[in-house]
Length: 376
Ligand SMILES: Nc1ncnc2c1ncn2[C@@H]1O[C@H](COP(=O)(O)OP(=O)(O)O)[C@@H](O)[C@H]1O
Ligand SMILES: [Mg+2]
Image (cartoon, rainbow, N blue to C red; front, side, top):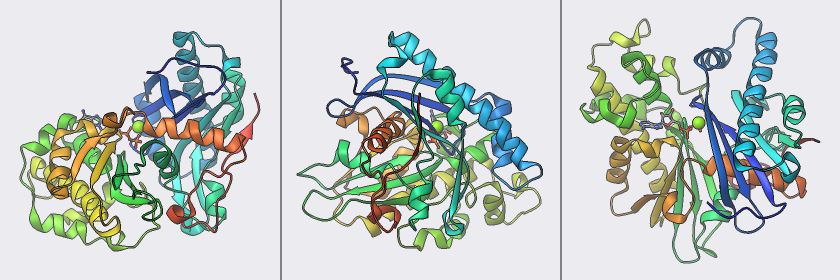
């Protein structure tokens, strides 16, 4: 953690598709992005379930969305105020909060994406300017609205010597291709599921949010025909730009692949074997995405919650062959905080009227200033 210096301080708030909670990062942007303080608040169970429910069509959605935005924003404010109190920093010392919000719909093909948050309430409760709704403008410009972290990955991780790829293993996994300049543009896309299906299966069979440390998967054996059925999903072969989410990769998708729509918990496979197969799917689709779309990659740096799963990391290393795999910690940026830091950086881009998207990544018609600003 760096010494805190002056008014280049921004906060990033990230809550991803895993629905695990709120990552809050204080970032010093007066020089190269430096993490100054952090706070994680897990979602209370009820909030998590309500968000999960709202991720599919259902009754009374507007009412539920409104209420959940308020509840979420109260939690965001608690994270921010708690972090600042602990760090001994006044709200007035923070330039802005970049708040991603919680995605409940991502439909770029229909022209919209929805990240729940009530930014006005967050500004009111913290006394800090809030930048929110980063994805909509990119979609309005014909893009996927995702992934948005590659521009930040390029700032932090691009090397003049080595061809690197950064893989963020959240609920969904996304790749950023960083060829050493001048050997091509920065590119990026969602490779497919990261932890999302692993979590679905673990919650059914272990009653826990995730397969902690990949323990269940590590005792299982990959089921070849199930893996093949899953790999046959057309998403994996589609060329970038592409992005995905819980709309596609969810419990229903898994049930269909298991061939038992009625009750996917009892499709005739041992729970550990299915868990192993899902871990293999994540590892293969990340490695396959790198192989196909990032030719010449020498080093792969992972971030996001998936790095804590040794079984998954082992499978990924196997898929990558001779390529070197490490976490972003090796480059000085803690793997758990890269995404939240990216939204702090995106907030500053917005305030500077600088673009936040990379058109080569999202497919937008051009660079765009992202986000809506809610003054303190
Ligand atoms: N010790 C661990 N063992 C296995 N999985 C883990 C562990 N720690 C975190 N994870 C996984 O990481 C996920 C959270 O990752 P995160 O990067 O926060 O994703 P998102 O951005 O989608 O919220 C959890 O849902 C879980 O699947
Ligand atoms: Mg998370």
